[in-house]
Amino acid sequence: LDLDRALIRLGEMDPEVVQVVELRFFGGLGVEETARVLGVSERTVKRDGRMARAWLKSEIGKEDTR
Image (cartoon, rainbow, N blue to C red; front, side):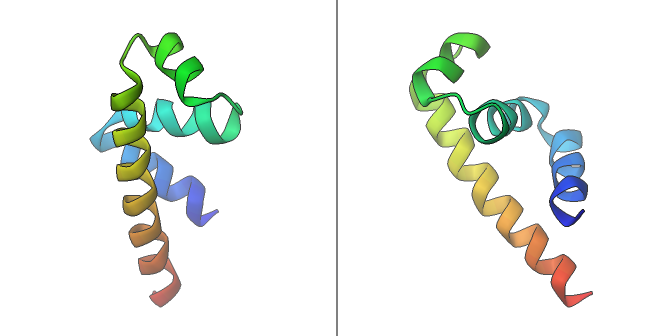
């Protein structure tokens, strides 16, 4: 539930990053496939994935302390 809530908050700020998370981690696509589906570069997919992981880790950590 914490992950779901964090993804919703992230989607409100940056829906494109959530698409990367959904395709990569829930859809099982690789970087190249995700880039092709979204029409962006592989570099963008990697950058967005790193940002999403860091942000989600931070947000879920906040949930644990509440």
